[in-house]
Image (cartoon, rainbow, N blue to C red):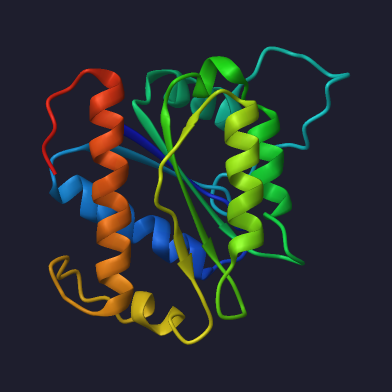
Length: 186
């Protein structure tokens, strides 16, 4: 499977980016082709519908990768009960042609116990872009952040945080394979 992960934080050591990096390593180890777009490292210009030059640089790279993707993971911090501005900006550069019929896994990191507001908003955006929301999502809340910082790379480790992440990733891949016609292997 060809998977695109968009890490939607503008913070250097964001937990949501660590989550995206973990998903990248986990899925790569499972044999999937994964491309991670870290919006902190690859910032995009501000989107404006009034300015429609031919996309170049990071925008063109993101759009091309999304066209080739079988599945997408969107990872965001939760700010004021919503997704990050940089992720919303990136999504504004994309459209239905980039998401139509593709499985999308939403993931968030929140300062509180859970970040469901941002996840619900991501799922609404995905529906509007004609993507297919994965039935699972990932929410890393306060007190769980250190698990990602301390992850040793042992992707089979068992604790509630990683068990939840692995379940969501397996469910996402299973649905993406079914929708793309690929044989299921999780």
